[in-house]
Amino acid sequence: MSRKPIIAGNWKMFKTVSEAQSFFSEVKGKAEVEGVESVICAPFTALPALVEAAKGTNIAIGAQNLHFEDNGAFTGEISGVMLADLGVKYVIIGHSERRAYFAESDEIVNKKTHAAFKHGLTPIVCVGEKLEEREADQTKEVCKVQTEAAFQGLSAEQAAQVVIAYEPIWAIGTGKSSTAADAEDVIAYIRGIVAGLYGEATANAVRIQYGGSVKPNNVTEYLGQANIDGALVGGASLEPASYIALVEGAK
Ligand code: 13P
Image 1 (cartoon, protein in one colour):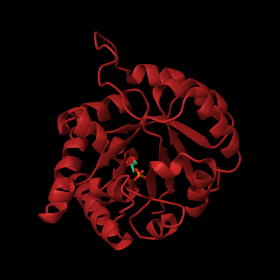
Image 2 (cartoon, protein in one colour):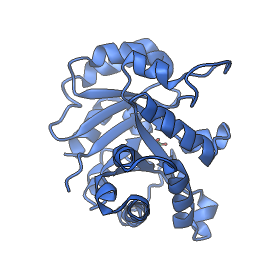
Image 3 (spheres, helix red, strand yellow):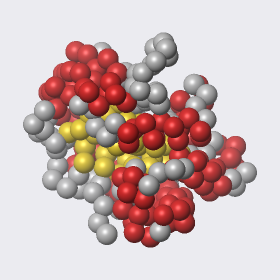
């Protein structure tokens, strides 16, 4: 089965509204390549302007988080209802920075994944091991636990639409990337986890990205691996030329 490659920029806590607009005007028509899905996951404040700017283009806009409830007394939170209403298509869930700094558990990640589907958003669910877990040879076990927890209670139809991002935490923002062969090994294993839960057809449909110091000069090598269907990119997604090169490198 052929899976459409997906490059997603995760801007993290970068860019004001005007910076986002000027970025978009530079990538419009360029970070749009036949056969590649291009997604920009921006801070909440920039989403309305980006959704507006992205109309009529092949660039999708994503959020970086959502609350699992639709509404309520949750000061400072944003729900799936609100994101869907804006026209946002994707949402990153369970990024390691949210797990580490905002105490997001596997259970919360699962609730957020259900909330995304409830509102027609495609979740990009992040999994990945810490350095000490890698050194203790626990990479696969950590990814198994996180993946199984995230998928709990999803139908096979929903499961097939999830985008998983395998991001080894030690490779995020460090310039130390996993080798393509190591990333492929873990990602093939994660696909096997999905096969165990839902069968081969679903596992073959799920797209799995690698994330962690992906740059224009290494993206093609990752995407060349049999099981790697895209990249979730932080730092290198912030500059227009670099983002365009990432999308071009995925075709
Ligand atoms: P970098 O590409 O900056 O290493 O960040 C990876 C990441 O965390 C994307 O979600």
